[in-house]
Length: 439
Ligand SMILES: NC(=O)c1ccc[n+]([C@@H]2O[C@H](COP(=O)([O-])OP(=O)(O)OC[C@H]3O[C@@H](n4cnc5c(N)ncnc54)[C@H](O)[C@@H]3O)[C@@H](O)[C@H]2O)c1
Image (tube, rainbow, N blue to C red; front, side, top):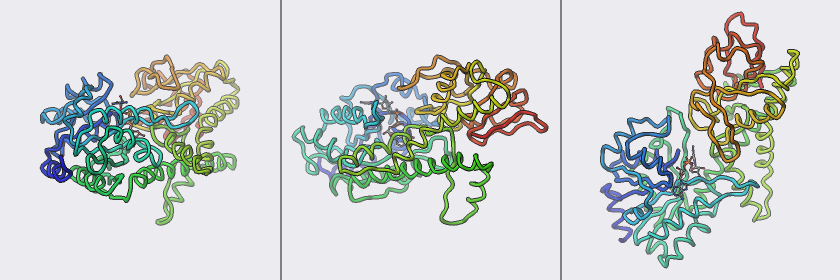
């Protein structure tokens, strides 16, 4: 198939879009292409996700079950674990994890495995787009050689581009369709085809000159957040010593109508992106003899935050005449951010483990996680206690790590002696004698 034929298929919405990885990024993308009229095949190694999708069920809470059910009903969305389905795809979008290894080095194994799976079925005219966040050069230096080892060459035989995903799970104001999408190919023909594909489904497409620029733009966005969060975390600790409330300071500062953007402190970084992606760049920068000091410093401050929260809890218990050793402590929230069911890299796990190491008897409450999930780093055998004032009574300290709306009712804290709040989310009932410590 020629590039012109691919562009025709895109214009007529007949191009079959294969999406490798049906997680937090791949599933919404599959829905957006389905809703734009394209036939979509969602590929995933996880058979549970594939089966759920084919039954029309959503396994991600903030993605409505109705949306998935409606998409499957169109007959134009199905999921599969059979990678030979890629042979029928005109465009393949790769949305697989990009975690860090044991020593904070990029783990590209998912991206490379997926690219190899695509290479085995690569055919003339196919467009391949990498969406996973990664260091600049991955598309050109790591993916392209795998695809060209088939004997097919870009741009004559196939097209290759990078387009970073921008998701803000749970944010009602922005959706995959309305968030502008940056697209850059390994050559102009690839960029043309990828821009045409995304423009057919997404409101605003931002064309850049290369895959490297597209890869770097995503890293700039995430590093910007990581550094600014580290800054407010450092200021939180500084102002706290001076008896000044950082939250009130931010509210005041954000009344400046220009040149300021508020960031908020917390118990540490979480999620699949901000705690990990900056280190993809610092690893790659080392190859060029560059030491990315801002990234390292932000990482140091942000990874210290769970320790700060635990220190504040220990001191608050001490002030109440209690020892952390043997204290009953309740941690509120396992999600890394409020009102979503995503606990990846959540600082809550580290807080729980640090409290346990100090001898505390720890339990947690999170309506999104009846049981703590086993992650790459943490394997807690714990179940959530109910989210009620009676269940919260009897703990020596309650540590709020995630600001879920369920934790915002003042009445919940009516029978609690000490609350440590890392999100400025706790309001105590009127006339309460509970000690509230911000951490
Ligand atoms: N979650 C976010 O908000 C977000 C936002 C922007 C960018 N990203 C980036 O997008 C990428 C994907 O993140 P995610 O949050 O969707 O991850 P995820 O873990 O939710 O989903 C990844 C999916 O890929 C599947 N998978 C793994 N290896 C596979 C393979 N070889 N073939 C087929 N499927 C495979 C997994 O089973 C999983 O379902 C990452 O690079 C991440 O940094 C994520």
